[in-house]
Amino acid sequence: MQTPELSPYWMPFTANRQYKSQPRLLERAKDMHYYDQSGRAVLDGTAGLWCCNAGHNRSAITQAIQSQADTLDYAPSFQMGHPLAFEAAKRLVDMAPDNLTHAFFANSGSEAVDSAMKIALAYHAVNGQPQRTRFIGRHGGYHGVGFGGISVGGLVNNRRQFGHGLSGVDHLPSLKDPKLAFTKGQSNEGADKADHLIELIGLHGADTIAAVIVEPVQGSAGVIVPPEGYLQRLREHCDAHGILLILDEVITGFGRLGAPFAAQRFDVRADLITCAKGLTSGTVPMGAVLVDQKVHDTMVNGAPEGQIELFHGYTYSGHPLAAASAIATLELYQHENLFDRARELEGYWESALHSLRELDDGIVDIRNLGLMGAVEFEPSGGTRAYRIFENAFFEQDLLVRASGDFIVMSPPLILTKADIDQIVTRLGKAIQACR
Ligand code: PLP
Image 1 (tube, rainbow, N blue to C red):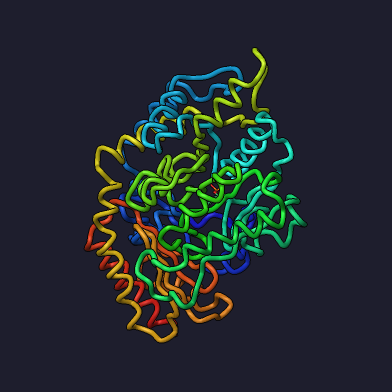
Image 2 (cartoon, protein in one colour):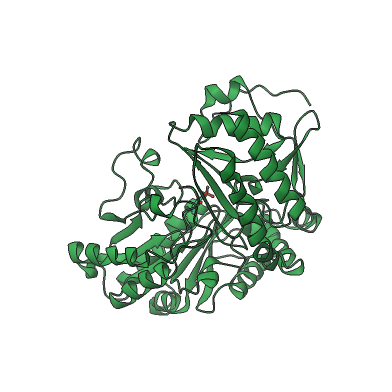
């Protein structure tokens, strides 16, 4: 296939002039690999963009999408429905923590986050506390790109071009701690950092706060793993003050941490979980909010008969192709035990990743949990990590992700130990080539 004309497409989150001067085009994919236009295989160390958890072009999923496209292309989701959306919701809540009994569909992680924030506000209003309008996020948090998401998010670059965002938002401090550099998995120090929430409650008043939203493990900030007990402590503070806890599991959902959701891995109860990406293994855009039974029932049973209880939704909520994909994807995860597989491979992944430490003095931290990992370099304004990413792609046939001064990885859950060896060997070569 010829290289397409590049100029008309304004690419997202991309330095467009830089990209277009040396484009990286992926033409097809299968299982653990992408293939470029010359047929060169590139090992996928990032599951696309943290999303293709089942690997690429799995026939059980692609066939379900194809057959659905021939059966029902679209059905309205307001006051109308189609069976697969209900079936997808059922499958999803079946694998979710027990208290999350309902699913609200969106089309992306960003939409799931904004939906969850609206549900939190609407719930408090119905529950007689309409003054609870404040949200607490966390430094380094990424919650997508909607105005709600960038407001509770803690990455300044995602906000600085766009004004002030929502008012009434505050942030917990980052969990990043240089003293904990090279910790394998979770640290057992620092659960008390959750107590900063008490300070924010003191500052703003508990009765003004609708919800706390955090990623269980921060992905985009560079795989920042919470210390043992931290999330439970946040939960306790939320419970004590009537605040909802939203876990943004857009990355950590669907086996990334060796369990369906991080809430199960960490044994922490969420009132709302946002998810997307792995829900359809990246095949068709879909996001969802998993909703606690009490929150749902308060809203739905509290509304007068015949009145819409939540004035919110999307034309494509529960889209037939997305629903077909979600059903096939969740089935495939279960059939191939991919979440257990991720848990089994975690130790091997951890050792392999940490072996990179010996390679280069410029590596200042390596972090991991489940099948997520990050290698952080001395600050260079992101230039070294970007060069490593480029070298990995062009010279080592490996896709990793550069973000700031670190390289992040989140391979498909189908990978083998040999794939892990390859990822780490190739990344090591790229690191050495880009001193
Ligand atoms: N929340 C988290 C934790 C994410 O990592 C992402 C995307 O990476 C999002 C939300 C936004 O998802 P999307 O890009 O599908 O809108």
